[in-house]
Image (cartoon, rainbow, N blue to C red; front, side, top):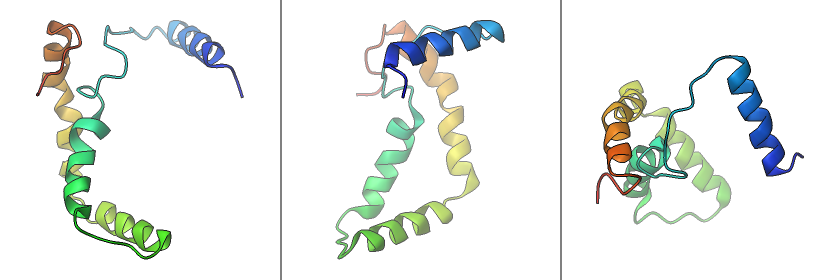
Length: 98
């Protein structure tokens, strides 16, 4: 496995090679990670109050939940980045929604 700085260097070289623009963003912002602002809340509400006897039972419930999500669920999460990004940048990385 590469040291983390090695991976970062390789990633930066790859981005430069293909001409991708690196947009400014605060590191590890929960306001810009769809899993944090869009996925985990609904998942937590779904699992709230449930108890699982085995890990396999939990995995089965998670698969069932993901399988039954409407495709728009994911579209909404990704599209909300369009409004969250400028807010987060304007607030210099402070939380968009408190």
